[in-house]
Image 1 (cartoon, one colour):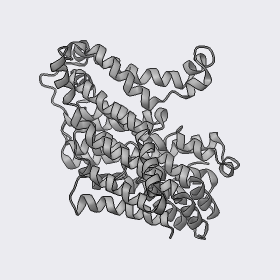
Image 2 (cartoon, one colour; image 1 turned 135 degrees about the horizontal axis):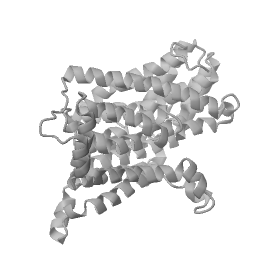
Image 3 (cartoon, one colour; image 1 turned 135 degrees about the vertical axis):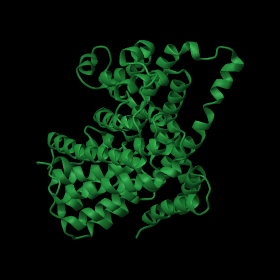
Length: 449
């Protein structure tokens, strides 16, 4: 076992021990984990700390996560969320646990657009998490459901991780984009069905009731009072239309260059545009006097602190692990195995899930995706199935404590203690989704390839 592999194991165990045994907060644990991981770099420790910190501080998802937290704060403080919840309740309120079902289905739909676990949780969760909180779910349950659904940004095509796999010559030679797209969509549908079953179970176990209709407006009534709240959805629609589909094709090369269009990031622009729309629509609710405005902004500070620290040092540690050679070590280890498809899929899955704990799905696929694919194919698994299995295993990253960014995004929006979501996420999302990937690998869940 190489030094980088040992560093990964120590990193994960240290964070868990710091929170569970030492009983300190997760933010401290991530800082300590980052520093200890860098120590495995020997003489390069200070360089690793510096470069890792710069990588984390400039990571796109860190900025996006902070933007989403502030966006959620504004939507709540300006009263737009109340209007939106009233509209949604008038439609889905009669269904017990309706908000959770909406979050799950909306996450699958948005997963086909965003390709990002963090973006999925933040965009959908900004609407559904407050709704869940107000309709009988606890804050921790709301955060768990939203973070657990994050993986559909990776298990539904298209997404960056999928294209990283196809970018490898050894994979693109045997798997076409069309084959992977269709097969991954089928796999994503399996994970969606499972998640809906989980919500049904949660509703029954927690005795979530339908929202009482007494005193509530009808759909038409709630729409008349709160139609302006629906304008915030333009913040999602505009970036999506500009980057994907016929509108994107029309403006490419005419209004905007192809290079500039490719540089537009949905996860960055969605919160920025929604924040701007919220300020315009909710202008009357925002204090105008300097002192009152500062007090207004100060209310948002607690939401930023912990999440910012966690994401910063999570990304920093992932960069350190990459620099000290984690990918090479795992590649050598996997290449030496000669196992049956079922056993190989089990080992590959365990490896991907562990690596995806501190890393994003994209980083995980970048680090060991080709190695994992080769190992699966060498054991007799169909190449298309192998590519899908790698992606579904990697999709657990959003629900994998302690480093999954969606956990802290969802907890920040919900106001939950992220540590209290760790066990439910592992039990209800990480292990079962990994099991679905294994069933795909051994052929017990068909992909019709």
